Image 1 (spheres, rainbow, N blue to C red):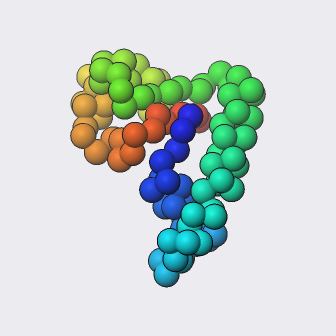
Image 2 (cartoon, rainbow, N blue to C red):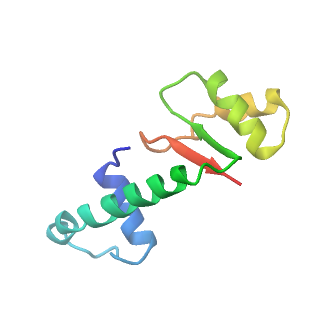
Amino acid sequence: MPHTDDHLQGHTRRVGLARERTTATNFEALPPIPRNDLAREIEAIRDQQFPKFYRIRKRVAPENSADPLANLLGIEQEKALEIARNIYLFLTEESHDLRL
């Protein structure tokens, strides 16, 4: 799963690898580090084949995301569809892997 540089810069700030004052030059050196870490973590999680592992994607109809959301949250399908239709559910172009 590709991660945008903006997403990775936000991640590096959240985990303390960068700060608000980190220069653009320094950020250019950082993306390969979290990108590789995230790719390995995602692969490791998928390899575990957890019984309650769900995926929602921005590029599919909200109806396709409602079932995983309903299962994850233990809510009715109608409420899950309402959440899936929320324009703020995806703040990036990425898919989301959900697990309990």
